[in-house]
Amino acid sequence: MLEGGLRRGAWPFTVGERQVPARLPNRRNRPPRPRATPASAHGILGRIVLTDNQVWGPLDMSSASARGWIVTMAGLGINLALGVLYAWSVIAKSLTADWGWSAGKASVPYAVACGVFAVSMVFAGRAQDRFGPRIVATLGGAFTGLGMIVASFGSSGSAAPIVLGFGIMTGTGIGLGYAAATPAAVKWFPAARKGLITGLVVSGFGLASVYIAPLTQWLLGEYGIAETFRVLGAGFLVTTVALAQLLANPPAGYVPAAVKVREQHEATRALHASRDYDWREMVRTKQFALLWLMYAFAAFAGLMIIGHMAKIAAIQMPDLTLGFLLVAVLAIGNASGRVVAGVVSDRIGGIRTMLVVFVMQAALMGLLAISSAPAMLVPVAAFVGFAYGANLALFPSTTQGFFGTKNYGVNYGLVFTAWGAGGVFGSMTAGSIVDSTGSYAIAYAVAAGLCLAAAGLTFAVKPPTPAEGAGTGSGAAEERLAA
Image (cartoon, rainbow, N blue to C red):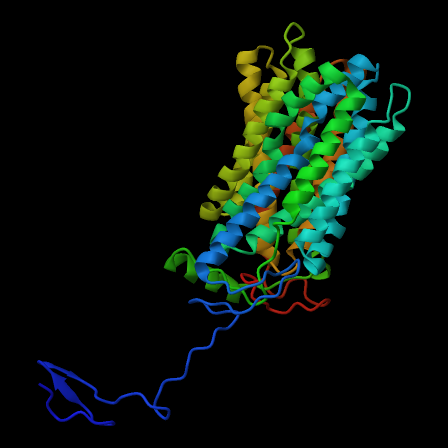
């Protein structure tokens, strides 16, 4: 029975032994209807426009997370096609055996592709920031596939179509696709997960050789070099262009939900401690110079081995045919290194993880020099791939952590030019050394020294303060977790 009456505005009344207000809602005291905002952390994010940067429809936290994973898996799939670069050693071996090319000459298309890949990352990163990932990745898929098809017109006496097709066109396509895949994925997730997501996306690039190497080996045996380029080009063209349609940036104002309260606190602290750097500000910092040198030294060692793995096996184990198997084993290590390093860096930091990886790389160069049996060469190849792949996860996430997310595409593109420098000089230096000495021993020693130098530089790298690099560009303290 109600005590105190039941009329509009009566306050309070009793139901049983519990006292509750009797005020009934009316137009004057009814609470305002909650309005969805783009940055709401609790539910509807509002209407979102469908462009390369956004998607239509209401987007709550669960659908946002699902959309983020779709973008992540699409990026991984694109990189599984773009990773044809890492299967070059199988093609190069056929160029020397079937067409009579020298090791140095067979290294030229690969070296050109590495250099063009790195340079195109700068422009691709800027285009991705401006136009969104879908357009950039679609162009990347088209250039990659068409470049392989152009390379199919090469011959034993004509290297120009392969340098133009694989080196320049495919190199450009790989840069466009690679630049679009990772930034689009990491923007859907909190900062505490940037290492893991980066590692997953780029792991496809490293893992590609697991299937591309044996497939290429079979195609070369059945159809020859020219038809192999043609078949691979057509397949990569269709696959990458299709997957590119699934890429999208989150809407403006989107803030990913933290996985844990502690992670939210860390992300908030990081947000207030730093800011987004544009590329002009970034290149003025000492952190950029140090990261660039470390990346170049580590890439020299990794790409030298990747580009010559089949040839290394032929020289150090002439009685066995393990070239494509070693390329596949190296690829598994490459992919796993990216994921593991991403997770570890989320816990102990990117620079500390780099120190461990650089020392590991130096030790592995020494082990490669004395590896003359499969029982030793196979696991060493796997760990070489692991260490190299780790760098491909550590440098993107560290670049984002140091310089912010808003301009991440162009910023990482500039850092990535170091990878191109390492790839060009690593591959061509090793090719010249083996042509003149018949051995990779000197190349191993040079690579080990560079890795130790990179390890030493880690002690000089500290996160930039908000004032560093200021003086040009906007430098606005944007919400780097939401960009």
